[in-house]
Length: 174
Image 1 (cartoon, rainbow, N blue to C red):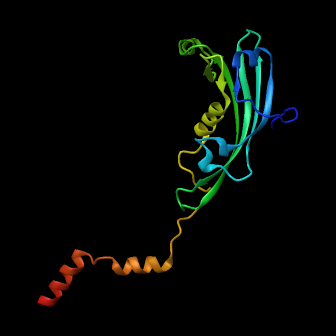
Image 2: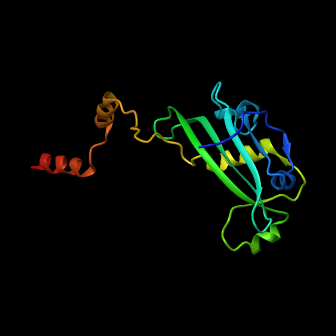
Image 3: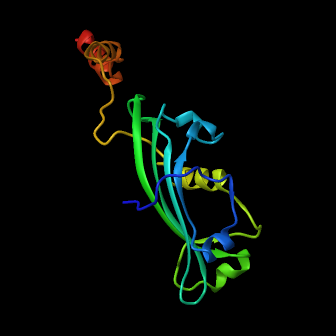
């Protein structure tokens, strides 16, 4: 669960290195309708809840960690009906200044390359959600909507087996 002080407005940009060294915390609501990438799936009056904390470890390595609570309206790919996708998305990134530093990371930690002094927070949040979204959205227990009349119609339209026709020809010869 997210622990945070009273919600505040989220900044547009954060300086990740200063944020981590200062052990800053920010939390608040992110309106998904303001996101070009996510607005198609945004639910009315359900902003994403955001908590981000900066910290440094004993080796003075900078980190950003936090959690996103998001609810999106997706289309089930089985039944093509609307479905709600809710997720709690925790993250904990080791900050790096270049991609070359990633090769030196031996413990398999998630990394975030911050070559610039600022990160566009909206971009960061969008990317976290897009990476977590299901590739194929579907209800947990969903059935294809099949109408009985369609089944009967399909069976009636089914062509006869060519061997059945051959059998009819053989019977007619006799």
